[in-house]
Length: 135
Image: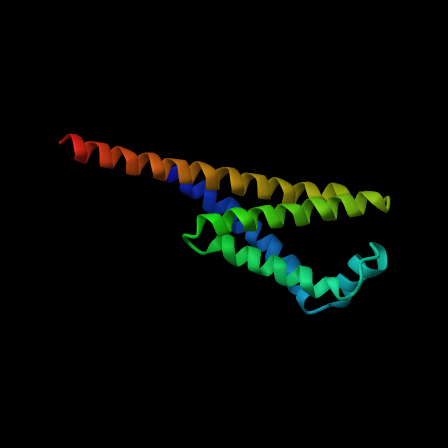
């Protein structure tokens, strides 16, 4: 369980840091965010801060303890954001889509260890309950 917790927090921390780092310029409508999403990809400018706030809320949800259903939705939303960004970059023919492998890999690793950690906690709770009930 200890190794799983360490891996979970390392991958979760890196993933959250990366997503937060991409959310802040979006929320503030920084020129680099407008350039990437509006000028290059063609999304409307009002979408840039919206997606930034959505990413920020997702990051908060995956970092705050508890709320397993909310975490599932947050992971899904952040993963959809990354898949959508990767597809959008591919669609305009930029070679930058390869850069998206890192955040996608972090998302997958973070979610994998989140699920593994959750199962180990549930198994531990079941074992404790079984031992108490039998004793």
